[in-house]
Amino acid sequence: MSAATETADAEVPLLLREAMAEHGAGRLDAAEALYQRCLAADPDDANALHLRGVLLAQRGRHAEAAASIERAIAAQPAEAMFHNNLGNVRIELGDAAAAEACYRRALALDGGRLDAANNLGVLLSRRGSADEAEALLLKVLELAPDFADARQNLANHYLRAGRLPEAVQQCFDGLITAPRSTALRRLLGAAYSLMGRREQAIEVYRHWLEDDPGNPLAEFHLKACTGEDVPPRAPDAYVARVFDGFAASFDAKLASLEYKAPEFVLAAVALRCGKPQRALDVLDAGCGTGLCGPQLAPWARRLAGVDLSEGMLRQAVGRRVYDELVAGELVEFLGLRAAAWDLIVSADTLCYFGALEGFAAAARAALRGGGTLAFTVEAHADVDGAPAYRLHEHGRYSHRGGYVRAVLGSAGFAAIELEPAVLRMEAGEPVNGWLVAARAG
Image: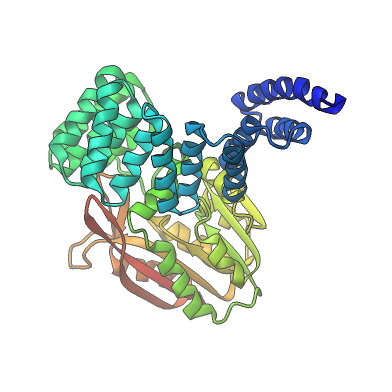
């Protein structure tokens, strides 16, 4: 053994322990630098490769994460945890088939790997393999009744399938061991709402507020259920809490819902803005994880994104297509950038707005003359007596088409077009919306 090899053998475990401590404390820059030092000393250290991959995934750099974990597997192919975590990264890369293969490989190597069984159950549920998904999640809970994530995932599975009493029962079972679980309380309220048991949903939210006064999720859903003190848009704290909570799985969740809003908005951009020539200043308003970013980039001389959720923005950074990403409230941000944009797009963000007057005025002021605005909103019937907007018990607003058109016209937009569209599926039912495009007059 050479002296250099002996030095590396002694150095890497110390560096790795230090890196793991920094990683666990959330100091990601320091942890990444230490993982790099480990790999400089030993490029084939499987643990350093794997943990570096996990860190890169946290930072939204999923392609790099997959490459790092694949190298870890090449060095140590029998480690089930590596395959499970590679599956998680494959989900974020949009390759559900590869993710499924990873989870199945992890279980083949270690049948007791409950995290892999849980992940596979969720994936199969989203892909329509309902019976196998249910069996897997039930088996996980048989072995680990306190596994809160699996309980939540099984409740979600039943909710998607319209098996609402079973979803309620899973929430009850989970709340016995995790009585303050935010996820299970939200699911229980949602299940009761879908069953038309409004008073019981209200009771869930009131008890939740007794335990956690001021919780923005419980407060907003209570207002949605009672119809009392309904705000003109969802509070910032509510939106940030919701999207920070599932930023890491957001893209995969939307894929399972046959999510179409970005596709529709981008079609409107192509129709209104012509051939991509990288000539426009573009704002992705409510950019989330950046799903629209790669498709908008061909039109953009400069591409910026704004979102309330810092968790979502960390995912958007990993796409490496944005010139600027800002954590902030959308209308406030628009108000700071007068005549700054040629194109503003917003996919599935304005469903958290009821009143659209403030947004429309700010968007018009932020666009240059002749600039394009394209966005989606959820829809309700445009009939006599229908309200301009309505807050639903699930926490999103829908809008009447005539109201949307009138607001844009009053704000100074022209060539206003509304096209009905099915934005996604939810609990097996289509979510109807409007695809809206307009020109700044």
